[in-house]
Length: 84
Image (tube, rainbow, N blue to C red; front, side):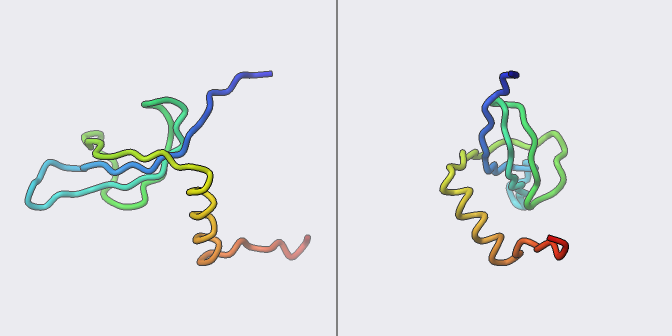
């Protein structure tokens, strides 16, 4: 049996530039396997340029995930396979 690192889900807000007059932000949801390793999906903001600065990271709970799924299922209901 292979030991896999425990993953956690996070929402991250990053400052994508240093322009105080016209700031740009990125918001992403991430599957993290360590403090600085994982992958994610950008929900808003410019593409990642490697210069962003983390402003806030929040770890999601099981309850958060269930509530997010309910909202997504309400707006984008799961497709039913007609062959099933």
